[in-house]
Length: 419
Image 1 (cartoon, rainbow, N blue to C red):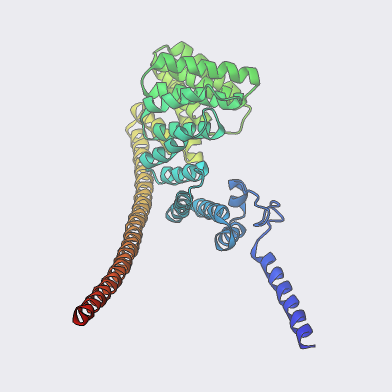
Image 2: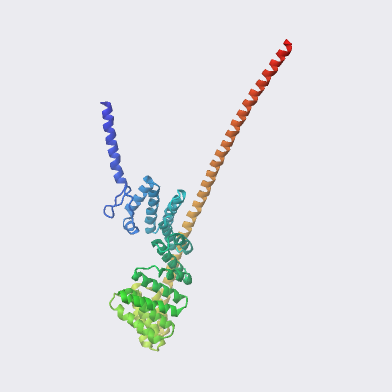
């Protein structure tokens, strides 16, 4: 009876444990079918829209999972903190995953290096961002999805750090692999931008025209609009103002089908600049004023500043100049404050990440030294043990040898006495 009772209690206990485990592994029933046991994958988009559940899931993977699942847990938590803009914690978990992979000789996780590169990119550390993207670019199969994504991230990082020639190399590389024609249009536009800032205007115009032709063929409205703006800008920089105006007006006509946007601000101000050089001051000022009003509505500070700089120069009275000058100074101060604020935030984030990396290095060296000490101690202990065994064996041999000779001498002495 007692044994039966114990058996029943054991069954109840196991059942309660199983029930508890179900609550420990969130199943994301409203999001996807993944859970710890299924080994399914969570996309970054799913994680971003379900941060709380994703964090719990990641923690349970780390707490109860296999090595592969623990790596996944680090990835999930890293993404959670990344989407919360907690870049130090994001970097920590991505690095935890990378270290665990190295320690267990697992295949390289391209995603972890890409995400770690994304952390560095987000805090303005383009050098380290590119270094991580390069690891994926150099290791992943040529033309694979990770190869293409890493090439794009490298190109964007070089472009944002104003290394346009280097960015151009990777954008041109991407033109070989884009099966998606919409993305190919975007790449052509990026190539054109690289040539523009490298002052290769004819090449800029060539790729803008390629973007326009392809956009027209596939009916890609946004690509066609941006290509027209760029072609107009190219002709403006080549001082071919009639052609510049023609393509920019085509962009304006095309944009009339859309809601007001940053592109429309640029179109207005570009038309203002073109008409200044065509000596149509009245029409130019009209375009500048339209661009200024829309820029202020959209908080497009860079173009607001550009419009105000022209309106100041072409003011018709001292009072008008004073008004535009005050607005110009306010916008400049706002832009400077935003730049400094962003810069401070990035510097703080970089310092936090660097401090965390330094601490990890210290801990890694400490762990290495401790491992070396333990290994050395074990080797020394082994040597001493062997020495002790050899010494003990040698001592036994000596003792046995001494007894043998003593016994022999004793026998010899006895024989001599008898003789």
